[in-house]
Image (cartoon, rainbow, N blue to C red; front, side, top):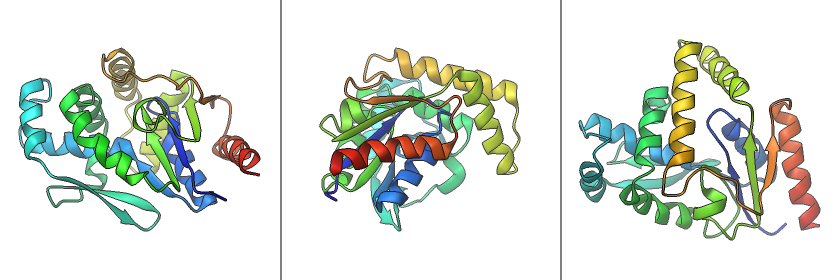
Length: 223
């Protein structure tokens, strides 16, 4: 099977990470969580007391900060100024900050080359918001994973509960709706399905069913 670039885009809480990891594992591909790049950058900016709502301040920060992607097993590890922030980036506050800074050209320019370099040789499942529309417009396989907002809120609360973290449904709902608004309304690369992407509404589907739909499309095309 020739190594292809596979993109899986969609809003927060749609199940992109779980599905993308499973697809990558089935195909023995590398998994690239591009959201982690934006989250890591946002986390570092917050650590450095950068005003994430100040475009020029964020642009100046981008000119100084060092971001790297390193292969770690079956996924890519994000290193920012020599640090792997790990699970420190996995909270709603950092997610909101990442959504905010992702609208800035300086941030997207900083990370675009890294992402394209990671997918240059194929054999990658790239998960994010604009993988199929901007980062890998020529990807052979594109998917857009969606779900109703109430279902996405429920999934995020369940995910946090499984990690023994506080799951405040009201706060999750507010943050997710704010992220949806930020992602869909930004001028630069707004969240949208690529014209040639297969759109999957996973509201009433489980992970295995979504993964099977994706693998079926890929395997049929590669026969």
